Amino acid sequence: MTAKAPNPVDKYVGSRVRMRRIMLGMSQEKLGDSLGLTFQQVQKYEKGTNRIGASRLQQIAEILQVPVSFLFEGGPSGPLADGGMSEAPSPSYTSDFLATSEGLTLARAFTSIADPKLRRSIVDLVEQMAARESTDKR
Image (cartoon, rainbow, N blue to C red; front, side):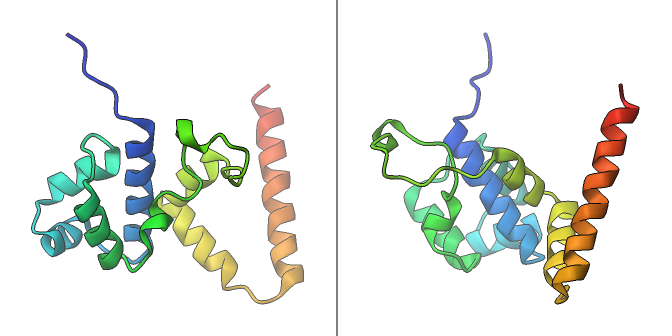
């Protein structure tokens, strides 16, 4: 018997919960306490293993100080979303990156730099490093 894979929407919403929780510097335990749950249940929500019900989703959004829509932004489209009117989702690597503590730390530090020339120099440096690393792997 094979285990059922998490639904892509459940995984995406869970990753957005995780990203926002980390952005706020909140532990899984603290979020769980606020919801009356264990941190293990929060882990299951964040991995998409367990679905988040509508009322619980509303609670989480309030605790994380975001609208419920934030938890779905850029996520996988459902069968009703193919009318051509929705925005193109952001690449998944962006949300995956921002869901890590390193990604959030880097994004916070980068956006705190006021000088646009310095920001551009940092982007150029990182692009050069990435290009060099990809040629070294060949």
